[in-house]
Amino acid sequence: MKFASDRLKDLRESNGYTQEYVAEQSGLSRQQYMQLEKGKHTPRLETINSLAKVFNVPGKFFIEE
Image 1 (cartoon, rainbow, N blue to C red):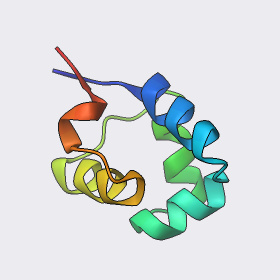
Image 2 (image 1 turned 45 degrees about the vertical axis):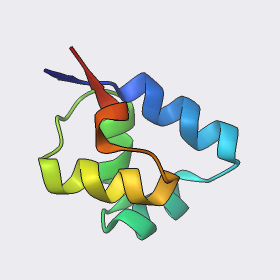
Image 3 (image 1 turned 180 degrees about the vertical axis):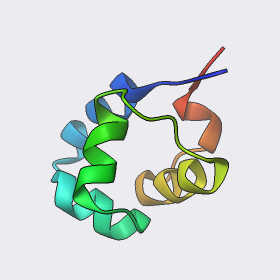
Image 4 (image 1 turned 90 degrees about the vertical axis):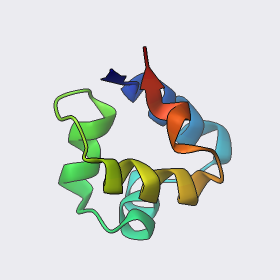
């Protein structure tokens, strides 16, 4: 299982959200969010679920198999 950081960035941009907005809505710092988007950090399941809620997608959207 691998976190799809490119999907996260694409989804954020297609919704017109800033990194700051997504970080705030998901309970992350901007720095933590930036690391996720760059693929430098693998989030915990709770974080994936928080991000999924922000974008109204299932958590599995962010998982590559």
